[in-house]
Length: 222
Image (tube, rainbow, N blue to C red; front, side):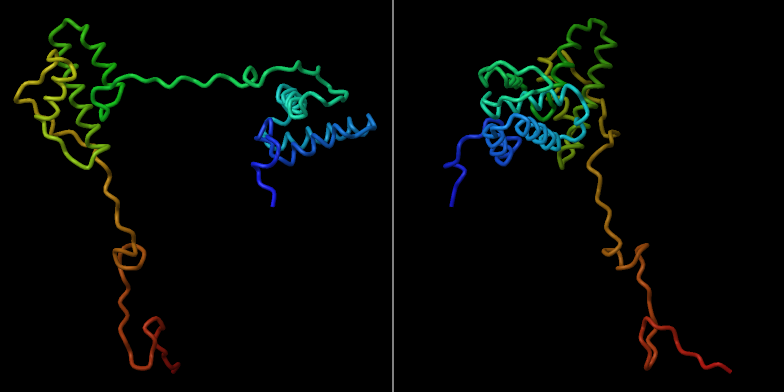
């Protein structure tokens, strides 16, 4: 048995090992006309991996470049596009995008809330600041109701708001957040749980001697 660890490494794994073997076979064809025809057929087969881009000129150019790369630039055919220069694979592949690593004081509220608080700190009008504090508290409780299976108290929301804003935003002791709705939706029971029939009701059949409950009673014609 031949394992992948014993096989040669694929240069572009997304096309599969069969494509790699076919590309190596195309390089060994001595007749140039047959080699050109085989290379065109191989490019058509490679295009089936993304058929939605098959007719795009830029994508076909990319397929021919990949064919040269797969063959380690040993392929000698009459390509409709210029042969690319030999490049290091590290230059062909894009650099990985850096993941944003920023400290979030309360991860359950998310990064957006912390960014919003930083902008609100610059507000000088006391009425606008009070309105902003109420809006933020509303959002904080709404997040709790949507993502947690618990209903936090107003005291907890007020304490978190004070801690997040370093005491700059506070709510009065009489401010009530109980009117906020938006918790996790309760799953409704299926019709089978309600009675086994559609609409939540079960049909009741009167038992008659000698008759099946689901059959209509037989009546003799007069």
